[in-house]
Image 1 (cartoon, rainbow over the protein chains, first blue to last red):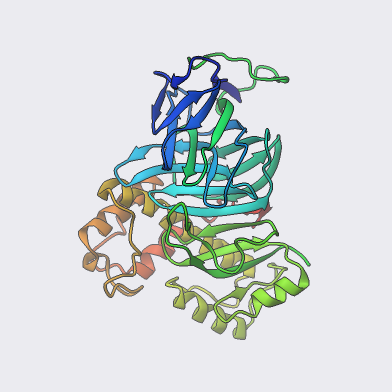
Image 2 (cartoon, rainbow over the protein chains, first blue to last red):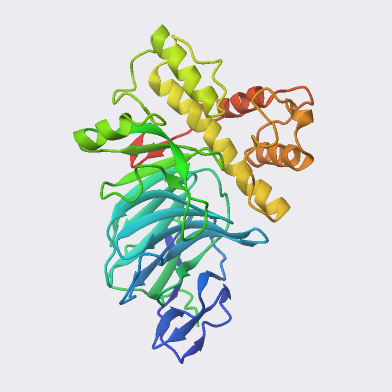
Length: 189
Length: 199
């Protein structure tokens, strides 16, 4: 497993930049902030494989039951809408979701608080939600075979905010363990 | 109690505000995980519920609680009951017999689920809209491939291709029942995990 991209969003307020593609997210106060209502997602410019993970730190200070936010894997924008698997928090639950133009909840546990690291993993047909390095749910789903990592939200009553994004590829052997924060190989400025 | 599987209806219209999710189970404090039958209104959900919650869920008329131990063979009475439940959920069930264990049955059903999960994506990407239920406009398990809407035929074929499955069996006279069972057989050795538990 290797880290392919990271972004700590530490830069001037404004666009996420050229290494991000998709919905209405922007830099606000050195964090990624959803900047429109409804469902919004952005995908990383990606050179890794389809067995991948995405993770981000949950820094939304207020969350309401109608809203959620979290990392996204195997996503592509298609005419039918967003696709991918997401591990999201809504202020109460940490939910594994499948997005194929519509939303399907695949698993749920109670959890996800401020500053937690949310992670979504997909390997073959196994989808996992991981909270602070601990697997919370795993389930088989064969729906989506390929796509890119990123993050998503449903924003109707609050402004979801994330920080410290990282995405990696399970296809590449791990060169060494990484601890203590994000060390970019390709920083997404 | 113990981790147990339940065949439950799907609720929710599929929006971010009202996602598709397992009836009765979603929203509770107990962790759960589920596999769905593509965009059909059924899910198999796994959870380790309290005895009270387990009894309440298993007692719902639209829920089928599976045995905690999936290793026994089905009895003749089990076969009759399971076939009825599966057919009611548009799942072919002629293959269910007393030589099958409960685990065999669940794994074949999850194989069928897997095929229609991918079908929903293939359809959506080709048509630019969320895949409707296969079983609309009078389509049943006994409808033939050639009688299905062209978009459905194409999506079924492309779904098979996406899994590397030969499509020679997708002939005009082949029933949906036969197609789904044949596709499920491809997943005979596939790993199925629900809530971290290998099925």
